[in-house]
Image 1 (tube, each protein chain N blue to C red):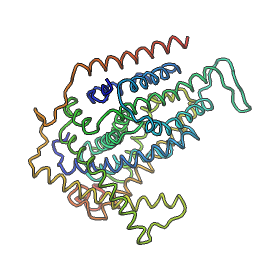
Image 2: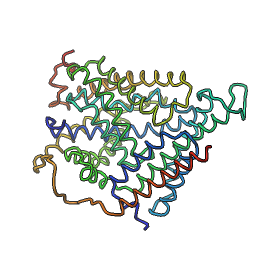
Image 3: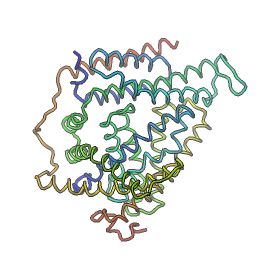
Image 4: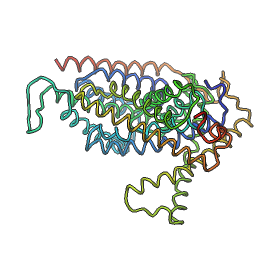
Length: 193
Length: 252
């Protein structure tokens, strides 16, 4: 998978992992305090934040693996920083990244418009929910409450990760620092769209 | 003895911790996570040197989260049979429901204790080196992660600098919390832009020094597997098995 990656793309990916690893950690603690008051539903509406690095880096690098790898790396960085969510973050990062990757793979890495990015956000949400259903024992909750959580998470994935990710990447493109990456070569930023 | 957990091979520790978490997810009784939780803390007391004050501070937000789980599962739990032990105007709590709620919140605590054990006894750089040497992580990825990790303090400094610049130029004078949240965007873009530049120059420097990313056969700092890694893994597995069996027996 890494054969046709340039080293600078891989280093970029891990630096994004660092920046978003910190952002993710901040929001985990923010979420935990909320979760004490309103329960696990506290995470659902902002879950999209944790998918954002997949979307941003795939939108910029546009190579197979550019969604699943940075999400996993960001999780690895979070573990390196040391926190109480711990090694299982790597597993959940992998699962979330695979969700986004699946959406891009389904469109054969050709189109990177807003709809596809939002689809990828939803993909992350669906994958992570299936994983969370198992690991956090949502089976113990009322099915209608679980359905509500699921809807919130998918919407959050689409809006925060999909739209937000594109917004941030476009802002970054405007600074001119992304010259030399696939996003700049595609003209207006939406390859083939 | 006091350094046993700190010296354990990080990849072994990682696999054990992850496996334990997956196994725990199959158990819905309150005893299994509780016994496991206590066992891990005991092991950490015996075999490692830990700053327990810091440990408590790290546990605090997760204790909050566990409490949230407790009452959510009680209020929004799947309707179950069993005898009602307490009832208010809106909902009745059966003993089964309470059991389930306790098990889910103890599970949150067990996961946190396990993760903190890992975080407090593992050196980050050694962990990545071990992932590369024992788990066959691609050197390209491993060294890139280390580069990113070493840029961390720089990125932090830069973030502070950008904030100060914004303040100096009166950009970020926002009073409401919501507006302050939107100003994150203004901070994030410059941080990301400069990390793009850092990535480029770091990658260039790595290539200039002959880094190809090919898998290696020898390492400057080898991380080895020793007999104690097997013994400790066995100990953790025994604790996991014991807490599963005792938990199931106690529930009956």
